[in-house]
Length: 316
Image 1: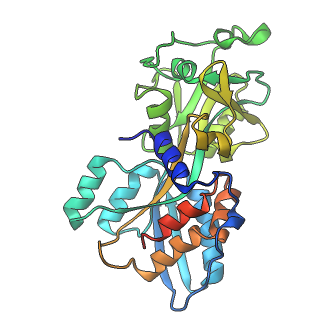
Image 2: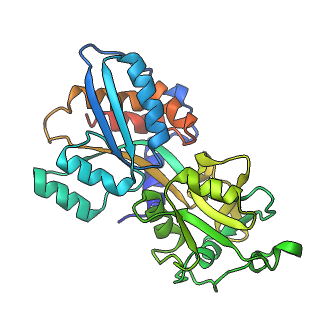
Image 3: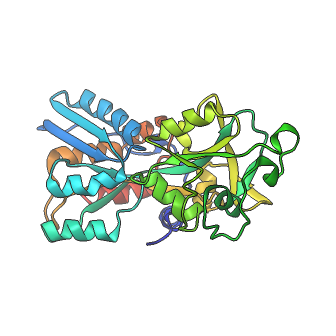
């Protein structure tokens, strides 16, 4: 499977537009008649907030629509699409070949992938922590038991250059559980596909839970979507090497300088050569409009370049 950051860079370059395009650059959503019914979404916990904001705006436009959102993890989306319990399968990672095969076995074709936004996975520390940033090999050495990126294991803050009271303090490690797409993306990019150190790694059930735990643990570190920043935490710089560290900004995600970035997906069941059902199609058009992309930004993610969003709309 392609690296998520490679996919992101290619998508942005194909538009010839900067990633930092604002939501206002997208066309406004135009209401259509005959939209009503029930819409169910099952999948990514990371996307729960943005889907709730999208649902709120969409239901204000269409009062006869009822939307139910369940954020149980990206791994639950393919099964929900296969058994028909959801029309929307949000995922914060790309769907896996085995998941595609299971869908194809049921329907005879692949699910349709729609990109609705861009996220940077941030490395969070307690607000009192003075560290500027970490390289991917250092991050791997902190989080993993396999150390595939070549750095010796790191267990204390002194081993990444902190002095004084910080030097001897052991690093507490937080992150998502294995059903999460965030877990999979971080493991692929920051651990080189290696394994988390199970003796130290503390799995949390949601993105906000990770950041809340870090805000209460002065000597901790963890990863989550950049939009989950709290007053008790801060996001540090990340890079390929210690001498080239970058903020988790839209521009740095687009250029590939910030290495832990990903696209945010919604998968749907669309039969080839046939239109998507009106309710699902209009919700996705709303998500890719100026109003929808503003919701993506309010949720703490990055909006899509307008030309790339237009490509996504052409799928349905």
